[in-house]
Length: 142
Length: 360
Image 1 (spheres, one colour):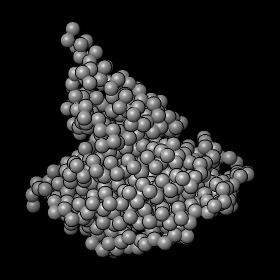
Image 2 (tube, one colour):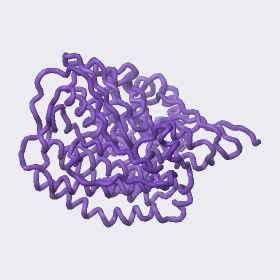
Image 3 (cartoon, one colour):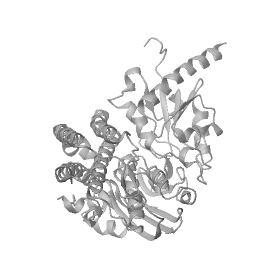
Image 4 (cartoon, rainbow over the protein chains, first blue to last red):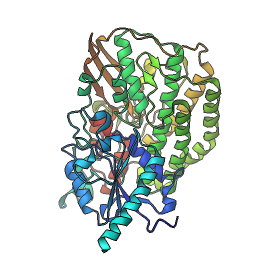
C-alpha cells in the first residue's frame, strides 16, 4: 500500500438519496470491508475531511448545505458521487423536486455507478479519489 | 430561569446518516422545545405514478427507502394486487414473508449498531454490523442484491429460493444465535448503556396512543399493535408473539427491538419448515388496476400504509404512502421536551428515524 501517501478522511453527506447507498457507505467502514485499515475514517467535521462522499441528487433545499460543506473543506479536496442518483438523478430523474446530478452544484472528481452502489465499487471510487487528491496537491505546490 | 439558546441539530450530523434539521430551544442544558424543519430528502416520487406504469412503479416504490426496501415493494404490490383481485400462490407469500423478516433482522441490527455508535460504544457498533453482513450475504445469495432486491412484482415474486438455499438460511440463522445473544446481552446489561437509556424520553401509553405512535415505539409503551396480526403474507400460518415492554423509555425500545430479532428468526424457521412444495411463484397479471385500496403492513419501524387508486389505465391515478417515521415524529418531539442536550442524539435514534421514507 505504498501508493497511499496519506490517510484520507471522509465526509459523508446524504442529500435526497434512498438510504441504500448510505448504508453501503457505512458498510465500507465496518468489519467486512473495513477501510479503516487503510486509515480511512468517516469524520463528521468538514474541516477535517479530504474526500466528500456524496449520495444525492440535489434539490432546492439541500443545495446550500452541499455548497457549504464543500466550501468548508480545506484544499486539496476531492468529491466522489456515489450511486446513479448522484450522477444523473437516476430513477428519480423525472421527479419534480430532483434537479439532477450533484455536478450541477459542485465539481465532481469520481462517479461511482450502481443502484445501490456496492461497497467494493465505493472503495474503488475512494482509491481513485486518492489519485485525484495527489495530483491536486502537486498542482498546488507548483 | 436560565438563558435561552437555540442549538441547530443537523442536517449534517455525525449520528444522523440522513439529513433532518432540528432547532433545539435550550434553557441551560435542558431542551424546552424542538422545532423540526424537513425537506432535504423530498423527491416527490408519489407524483411519479403519472409517468411510470403500475408494473414499473414497483422499482420506484422499492427505492422509497433502502433499509426497508423490500417491504416497501411488498406493500405497494399488496395494494395493487388487492385492487386487481389477484390471489397469490402460497409459495410466493411464504417467500415474501421470509425476505420481509430477514429485512427486519437486518434493519434492527443496523439500528442497534447506530445506537451503540450514538452512546459512544464503537466496538459494539462494529459487532452489530458484522452480524448484519451475514444477513446481507443471504440477500445476495437469494436475490442478487445487497440492499435493493427487486424480487417483488405485482402478482408474485421474481425468484424462487430452492431447498438448498432455504437450508442455508436456517443454518446461518442458527449459527448467528449465540453471537447475537452475547451482543444483545451487552445492550441490556451494560451499566453505561443502561445509564444513557433508562428513564430517558419516557412516553406513557396514553401519550403514545394520543400522538399516534406506531411500531416498536408504541409497543415499548405497552400498546399491543402489530400489523402482522392482520394476517397478510404467510403470517396466519406461523406462530409469533408481539413483543412489548411497559417502561416506554429508550431502554424499553431497545429491548423490544432486540426481542423482535429473535421472534423474526423463529418466524423464518417456521416459514422454511412449512414452505409449500408447489412451484408456482406468481400469477399472470391481466388488465389494469381499477379501484382503490389501502394496504397496511408492519415494517421494522412500524406500520406503513399504502393507498393506491387506479383508473383502468396502466397509469395509477394516485399513490400515497404513510410511513412509520412520519407517525413517530410527533411522539419524538413530545419526548424531546425536558431532556438534556446530551441525550438528544440517543433519543432521536430510538425512534429509528428513516427520513427518506418520511419525505419520499
